[in-house]
Image (cartoon, rainbow, N blue to C red):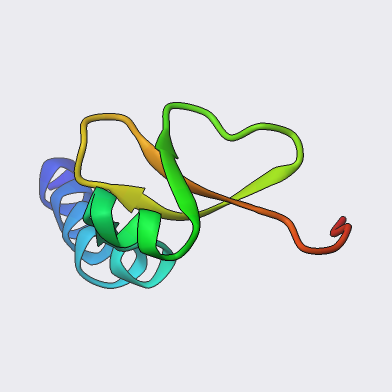
Length: 67
């Protein structure tokens, strides 16, 4: 029964939560938005999307200081 519960929880996460928090983006599209696909963003950049490339994220320079 626990396995069914964890499986249901995983399906809900993959179906509803994950798509709402990030999207997969093509590296060319990231570049068009003045961003870069990197493994980690610099301190002065923020993450906007997840790139198709394995373990890379699309980072864009912050226009103003955010907390």
